[in-house]
Length: 76
Image 1 (cartoon, rainbow, N blue to C red):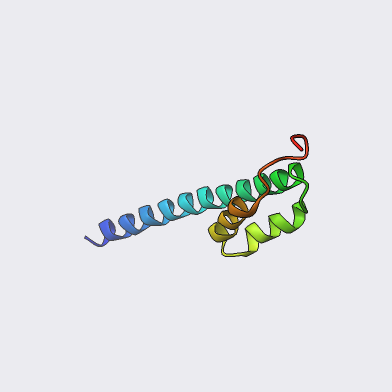
Image 2 (cartoon, one colour; image 1 turned 60 degrees about the vertical axis):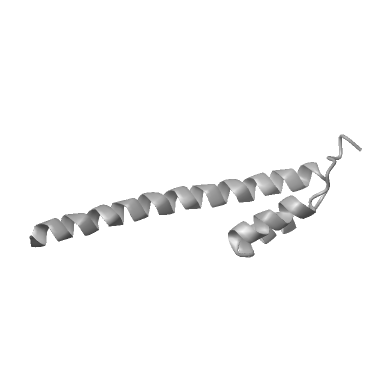
């Protein structure tokens, strides 16, 4: 009985590690994307990337998506 509990919790630990890695990859991707998007739109890319990363992560990304300019520099 004791062995089944330990294997169950080991499985939960593995799932947690995998989910954490997926979340970190998604956060890194969103920061890189926001940096490149801000540069294309003529805004300060470092400032936008830091905002997306340091503001409670999904909130910063949503704020950038709502406030970013609609046109890129090539479209102006």
